[in-house]
Amino acid sequence: MNAAAQKTDKGLMPISKKGLLRTLAGQWQLMLMSVPVLLYVLLFNYFPMRGWIAAFQDFNPRIGFSGSKFIGLKNFIDLFGFGELPPDEFLIVFRNTLAMSLINLVFGTVSSILLAILLNELRIKWFKRTVQTVTYLPHFLSMVIVVSMAQNIFSTEGAVNDFIMSLGLVKEPVFWLGEGKLFWWLVGVINVWKEVGWSAIIYISAMTSIDPCLYEAASIDGAGRFARILHVTLPGIKSTFVILLIMNIGHLLEAGFDIQYLMGNPLVRDYSRTIDIYVLNYSVGAAKQNYGLAIAAGMFKSVVAIILLFTANFIARRLNENTLV
Image (cartoon, rainbow, N blue to C red; front, top):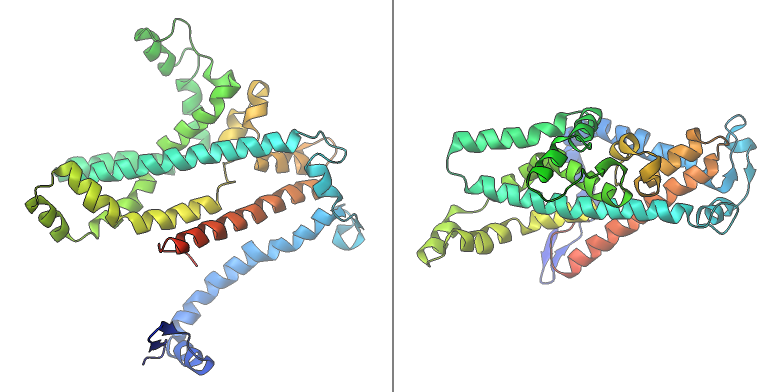
């Protein structure tokens, strides 16, 4: 028996209060080091949640929470189109957010794993380090710089149009920046280019922890390089993949703000607006501010994210995979 748990035939039994207090007392240095982080989270993540009360008010910033009129669920009724607002406005915004998030999740995850596998298979160390450095440097670039580069590259006279026209794929330049149906995929391409190298670092770290004896045993059994990747490398990073997938599902409604706001224009307005831009427009960007409606939209986004996170965590537990909680 140890101070953390008592082992029984059914597994680990939760520790008692005395055992917990004894463990905390023995690790008081770690507890003290965690205090600044705990205060930071409470101050910047949980304390602002008191503003959610404005979602149930006709909020006026001049008189504050106490003076604003309580209107119940009216803001949520308006949000979903059953009140004074157009019925499909928020649904369009929600569609755009979900579509771009799914594109970023799928292509971002697949590209990160592929890049990590390719780097893991390289045997020339200097070339491997060079490629890894070049691929993760865009992560540190400002989104303003990235969008400016993308606007030049994807303009009608940009490099992309010159390339595909030289191959004879199209006869006239494609209006990438003004075609709404292409906007989602354009955002996905930019996000992958910017973040693929940074995201691959975690998978590369997971691959380095795989026992080399497994590769040697697979080689002895006649497995080629592709077979070793399929039967050794991918199973070895499965737990890391599941944890990251759960976390990314929790951020499924975080499609982004910078790219959509900077690249958005009237031609792609119905495809570029996300929930974050919707909140901005109704809080400080509209002719008549509606803070309660904006907070209701943000509250809906947060609640859905929590539900998605715990749902993904529950499914992973049912499948006997590693979980966050």
